[in-house]
Image 1 (cartoon, rainbow, N blue to C red):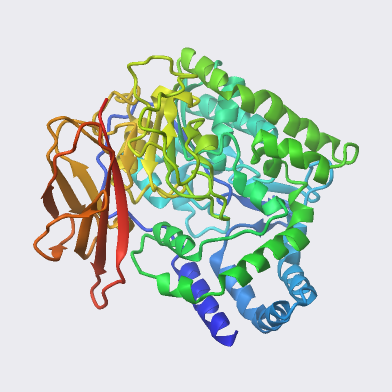
Image 2 (cartoon, helix red, strand yellow):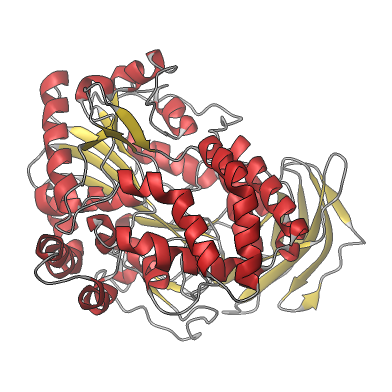
Length: 582
């Protein structure tokens, strides 16, 4: 147990000390600015909350501050160690009490009343227009309440858009989207009046993407938005919330969680040994107990929690956790979100398109939900809820003769089935304006060349009208961050993940910033001749001859090690799938 806590503390310190925005290695090009100010809407963890703003008692009561968390962990470490030992021996009460004491100040400050209104005088930061543009934020970079923004994103955008025309819109993430939508509507009007522009562009990620979708559903026909780009939006909620609120224990895959953290921190450090050493069952049990016993009584009064459920889950859990009298206001707003807005989102977004809004959605697929639920997702949000696409059962594929459902896109000439045969995008909210990246984690797109380039073009230009506009950005792509190690593609003129009748060669490319050594390559289980191990420096390629048979579904399994500066990794395996182009 002592060994476990030493490892745990070291891991916390590593992650917390490096949890900063890491600048992109290559500068993105500038584009011609269309004059529209851009409003960037952060995800769930970004906004800061201020109590008693403008008064002598003003204080910041919420932000994700890794150093603050680490300091508290160190302070409480003896109690944590003792309580977890008790927990492992069958007595959970000391752990519950310890966790309650650890979080008491934070939770009290952000608590909500049963009607969904804040217990204290709380506002998000930045809240007012004059403090929300990037020029002001950079000038005040030593200030007390700087927002958590994606540095690479802002830096790339500011090569095209003046910094005083890029705005950070922060929500009070505890509140219902119906409340935050009113604030966003007011904020947009203020930006238009101040800048003299006729329209704004919107970019929302994760929870912020859900707010963009909600705004467009209610106000998308008012002519105030030109481009709206949503990156991994929780449009239909996420089953992650259901997993935490439900009765079943969670089952985080620690190695997968460590890889997710690696992408967040832009590191290729191999931490799988740590995941193998940690007591996964105990950690998952501790997490579930902490949530149920301490966090849940606060969370059920957050309107946002109910917005982040899919409608089926909401209907099931509403009567379990909410009182029809005491929580009537929370229920009324959640009912409207789930029984009016969410079920009709596709129609609402189409109406906004018809009114002139260019809408784009970026989704990811190929991972299970972080809590262990086996549904197609980006580790945090179900692919279904992000995009409206229909996934195959997790771990399975559509049959060879599968015909896409075509419930939204009815054009039989359009192929919206992923090359992995696991996603049917013909049922998307917007099939012609939704892009997918295979094995890309939630919002971790700025380290990936495909999504980074696509996002910039979508936000800054009108060049991409739909998934057919630019062959460099097909509807389906394979994640290409350095952590993914290796990439594969067939020769010929076809989108990523497909092969054409003329294809006869597979090219392997090293995505890593360090050298890799390919140990073996198998195609549909058959070992391919590579003349031994193949070492590739960063961005180098290696070709393998292979002529697909007619309509053959192809799985290319690449086993490789990362040749670090001092230490080589244990073997990794990446499997990339190909289908014949239709």
